[in-house]
Image (cartoon, rainbow, N blue to C red; front, side):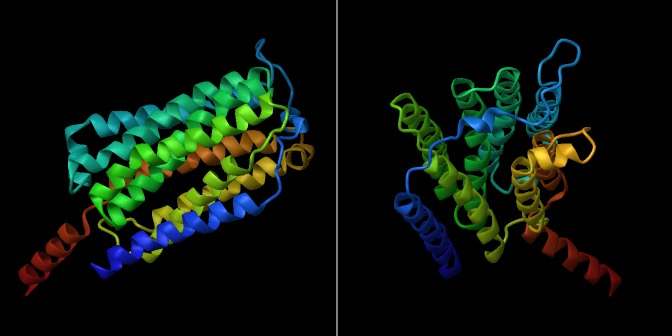
Length: 269
């Protein structure tokens, strides 16, 4: 019980620290140079082909994830069936990200960027809800699911409206992403309900790799003019989504795993 309460305070503390840092940071507009990606080559009549086509991984992982959750066998991966809901939104968010990101990269600008960022918040904010449900309290995680999604969507809309008013401010969208990453890492400090808990570290690592590739877009592309950093960002982020699916497919409830090990030892003795 003390660990659960400590988990609640831990996630709350992270939210307060990140939120305070966002408020104290000077207004940060979205630079228009952001839309000038390194690989602007067209192929098969599709502009910016690499950045558009690389979204296929989001589509595949999102579809496979939803298909897995619809199977009866997937119920064995959840102690409480209601714990599936955050993952439904995660994989649905990946499907929508594939569409929104492809639409944006066909003709990148701030107006289209909204449709790229909105579905992404429907991926990493439900992941926070899933972590809270599995590491702290199921009911709390499910109650926070719509709240966290609303916070993510709100951060994108706040940025979009600020751009329309000529005072672009991307701080709170960045804060939402940072909070999700820190919450993911903080979850590793709490006792898990399921095996495969270390997979969260892989997911966090792939997300960080995606951000590094995004920042090094032109430098990576200049190495051989084959793949750009932004294309690799999509692939790394898609791989993070795949790793979440892989975790769900392979994990077992910790209690069940303990009971199975106990029975095995009894039989061996």
